Length: 374
Ligand code: UDP
Image (cartoon, rainbow, N blue to C red; front, side, top):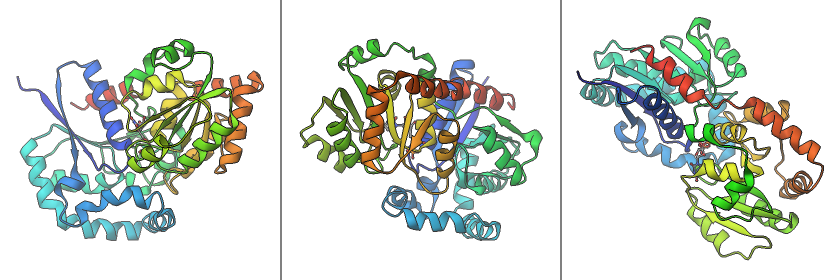
């Protein structure tokens, strides 16, 4: 008997959408080994017409230095009339090409893990002549873009209660909604809290507190400035900087003399180990990174956010008292120093709150919910 196929639709904007699809894939394979074929397709880059297919390449710039423009675009496209216009514009350009692709793969179920793949995704599947279940897995934590919500899908899985309320406000029928958490890799669920052992395992000093600095998959934000301040201020600690795909930042960091033991990495594939070894995380407010940090019990200092989809994450972390937000590198370094070297009661409270927000089984719960439809 041939295996049933699950097709994930996404666009590689940032690192989070693919990381989420992979985490769900891992969950499906864990629960139902060998039963399904999983296909993860970057629809935008592979099937859009030139030059629109190059749009994801500008995502790093537009959500980094071009943030003010992103904020305007995000707001404008939140109005339903403009959204309709946007989909009306894109739809004819790709409908046949994506529909042909979907037809050639003959999936038994489609999952969208991207805001642009829901309304359009349903159209593509219909155009391909398929009558199969279509599921949205929202991978933004709180203030997701309204285009995530297409009430016609069969199921919509969201990461938080706040996101569920937002989905309802955009017309998603309550019976189609479930809150399972943010899909993150299963390795995070297997971490134990023995920090010294993890530090030794990855070659860090087990006696020193470790501060982990991340800027999402693309290495966004004021990472260089923050790293310098941390190194100058939190003298008793050690620093791990993950520059992601930001090659320029990595080179600059590598050329710098550091006041404390410092490890510089590019894009890493051992984030679970790094988070297990770290005592504190300084990061932009990416939903994947925040959810992973909750599972690792890491207090957060949020140093920036992408306006729109990450704005709500800042409020979420602050309101749940799992971390703070500051854009000032000076304040970030002072806070890190207070937390790492100061009162352990404050620190333990933050760790406890992060642990309470953790959903280590999210990928498994999402996987099981999706496979019910097959
Ligand atoms: N990540 C990774 N290696 C890196 C940098 C980031 O595996 O070197 C992962 C990180 O653990 C998270 C994802 O990439 O799962 C980033 O997702 P997030 O939603 O935080 O931010 P985005 O990059 O999508 O803006």
